[in-house]
Image 1 (cartoon, helix red, strand yellow):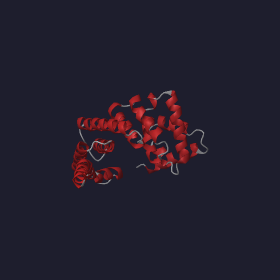
Image 2 (tube, helix red, strand yellow):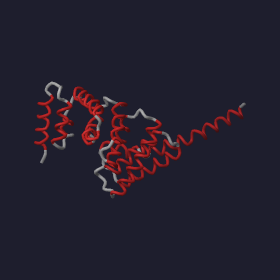
Image 3 (cartoon, one colour):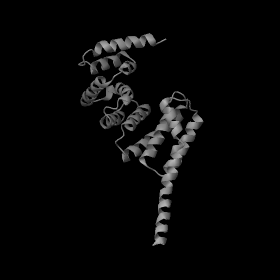
Length: 228
């Protein structure tokens, strides 16, 4: 019995080693991910080293979380204003990120942030399309009131408005209005406006909210004053 227990312990150690090794490798990338999220200083070399570390983690233990973690780093490398990759390199990183998101979300679909990331990646690769809208709507469905995510969502909504169906527009308009109601700060609505058409749409979204038109005008005036 003791021999069998010893064998069982050895088997458990052997089976757990890929997971433990993968976790250690993935932790090497945590600093880079934090720097991207908080816009801390991060060199491209350090980011690429972090991606290499997650590559090894995926090889050791290909879980949904590992694929999603790598997608965040790849999107950061491709789209962060702190780096200047060539158009070809940017496209390659975005396609890798898209593949990782497809795998990770296929295995773990209740991920509102990652669905929004997939929408942003597809928009960067393909422009406005229903392929971009589909993950955007999944992001809203899986995490509808995750307020920190709504500035990015609102930008994607405005960028893809022309390809939305009538039903999609009505659904999204209800969520945007609800987000306006729940937001303690609404300056990000003004920051999302980049054209008169954007302003028209946002005013339409909040048309039934008391005082919304006046508040939006005030926020836009304050934003104009802040511009050099």
